[in-house]
Image (cartoon, rainbow, N blue to C red; front, side):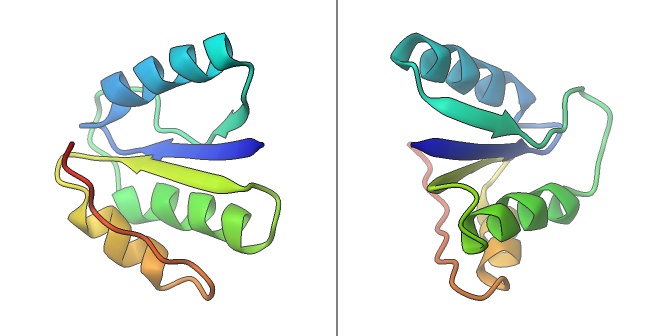
Length: 88
């Protein structure tokens, strides 16, 4: 399985934790960023991850941000993608 990861500045910490877990499980992934706490435009990262899944380069995508709503809305604009905000 290949997983695409993306986050905005509010989600970087959790994304880094997910990377450690995926490493421990031996799951391949690509990190599309962001990688710091500076404010960024979350749609840029959400669209990259969603396109990667839509094009078949990845089996799953995980997007992490402050609320999850904006990233889910952005990802859902990509044909073939169904994203939802999951709070837990």
